[in-house]
Length: 170
Image (cartoon, rainbow, N blue to C red; front, side):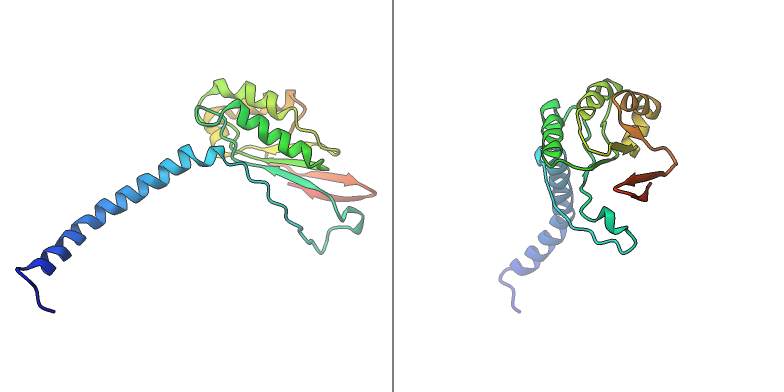
């Protein structure tokens, strides 16, 4: 390959120099998307899960899982309320809350607990804490969730009984 006045060589050098900049720009774009776009996306996904050891009586048990709400400066009350409304509209047998309800500050715990306390499930609402909840104040999150009727599991399992059959929720 011939070069014209060193143009190809200059272009290759410029591309090598741009690579770290492109990498940084791409990383910042991903962070921006995660911070500003994802909190506004509510995804309802339906999955039929076949468990060989699940008793036949529990076939068709409907579980709704909510996770990574991150109520805080970037996730508004309205967004959490929409998630609760969507979950309730599915008329679940069980609601499983799987952590990271709060994002930054203790001031978001009370309103989040109140909103999640509006979840309805025939057999109850159960929660475990995530790393963000522990960072903010695990005891406060646990106490306020329990005050709203949410069963918070802390290093424990729960024998769940329904329709004459049982399984462990952990």
